[in-house]
Length: 282
Image 1 (cartoon, helix red, strand yellow):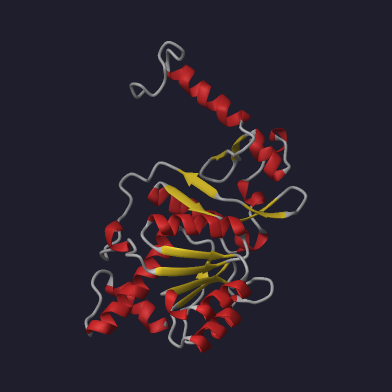
Image 2 (image 1 turned 60 degrees about the horizontal axis):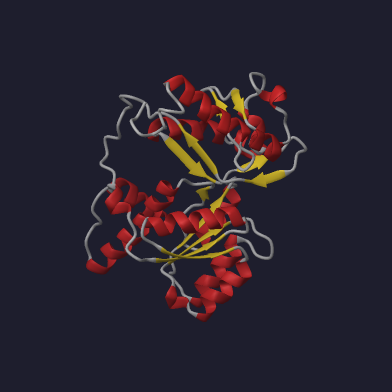
């Protein structure tokens, strides 16, 4: 046990410390804490999880797979397995996936999955940009999504990695912000399906105001017809939502690296394969 992490006069052993933390996790009502094995079977279910999802611990622990908490279209698309694989590879996964309660009501929740990163995991043979390369440098992002938790999370996380973010939950309000100051933004990141106006319609209006504006559109489920629509606007293919902050940072890095290369007449450094794909789809 790490020295100083617990008061040894109160918690004299590692086992006591584990029990102390377990009691906190299990009794917490503010946060949903769910433990599962690598196959997704639920092993831990705290009071916060009961309140959020509507299942009692006796109904799920050791009996149900955590896929029951994912919206059906994510399950069909293999998203739960993809999230688990990403967490195994990187040690964590964070995002705002669509979730579903026992009563079939859909909810959004900021989701953190932590696992020990796989030891000796195979590494990409193609060089990837370093974390410092993926840092923003004050580029201005207009982030649009009707899910407030996702706007909050992405605004905070993109700001932490060096971007200046304006978050909007209403696409019409976002469009008015852009229309009033189109040169105050360097990229627009939008959800596809929103009330009032879809991400494609928003992109079309933005491009009428400022042709060539970099735009990324994300969706929880990608239909080929929607990809055809975004391609017809000269935009990259839809991103699968929810993206990790690392994946979104990679997409933004590609956009700005391509822009800098166009300005200088040089090829962008780093992962030329990834950039080539981004360039060809833009």
